[in-house]
Amino acid sequence: MAKQYQGTIEQIDDYRWRLPRAESTGMNTDGILYADEVLFEELKEDAALWQIANVACMPGIVGPALAMPDCHYGYGFPIGGVAAFDCDEGVISPGGVGYDINCGVRLLRTDLERGDVKGRLEKVANGIFSAVPAGVGKKGRISMSRSQLEEVFVKGAQAAVERGYGWAEDLEATEERGCLPGADPAGLSERALKRARPQLATLGSGNHFIEIQVVDQIYDEQVASTFGITAPGQVTVMIHTGSRGFGHQVCDDALDVMQKAVRKYSIELPDKQLACAPIGSPEGQRYHGHMACAANYAWANRQAITHSVREAFSKAFGQGDEKLGMEQIWDVAHNIAKFEEHHVNGGSKRLCVHRKGATRAFGPGHPDVPRQYRQVGQPVLPVTARGDRCRGPRRVRPSLATRSFASWRRRALSSAPPAERLSPRRCPRRTRMWTAS
Figure (tube, rainbow, N blue to C red):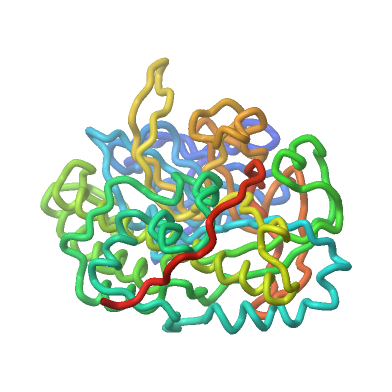
């Protein structure tokens, strides 16, 4: 049951607040909340702070347990929570990833302006609505055999591109190139496989959406230009969805295993929703392998949806999507656990970083930033030592802003991740579709 945080809160500066380590509560490190005073007044009564203090109690945590400005109560970890764990001594937790594994956001730019789209907006929207089923349990038009499904689990967005769903250059503008290493389909439940098979190229329910947007204001012309955003009025498309019922089932299946692992490895936790296993244990390795399958499924899902969106625009305008300039700017996950190298105590250390409702946001020069964006990085604040940011409506202004132009599914605040653009390219067109064999 959710509780209110009763411990001490110290203000570090205008935008950071510390929940100091308290041995009496079992905390192994501090909790750090990013918020201005207005947000803090909203958050200080939220049970999310209690959850951050709980995360700080987990074994093997490295650095503080972090809460981004959009932090709010979730399952185990707060949504907007970030924590890194030592790969030798730490744990991996489904509650630190979430049920919708690799729920993420993808942004496409176009050469169209608001006036160009206005007369064709309904046709575009109807085309997308017809091509992309939306909602709980909705089935898509792609049929796959077991072997083809496992190809998606292992290769992610690359599997979709190889089948003709999108452009090869889309992978360069996707976190991890759309494929999380370590995916292992072995041991996935039949229920998970059954939920995965019919749902590729479908949109989730709740706050998930496909939205046609228009750039409202540019704050940094040089950076925006690097990402392909040239002027107010430019039309963009945002896609927000994840791993559908498959990811939910992977999480659900793992929780039972993790509850047993907590007892097996004598792990003491202040909240059973933080159920976890040592990273190197069979249970930890199994969860990571299955979680990576779901993450890759989500990237393939957004890739296939991108293909349908481009086709809808092409049909509405009577010309190819390449001529419309429908390049992918960026795709970033906000429910994931990843192995990354970070500076710790003057050296480099491999950590398992859990980001739940928070995205990666590395700065200029970081090797994981795509080459074409390396000089500007990902212009999103706040950026912490591990390069994280919130992904929700409470956000700090990025280098460009977009606003809703049309949405038939659900209107939402436009919270575009840092736009990232590729140099011009031409790619082979679609060659073949998935079919059940």
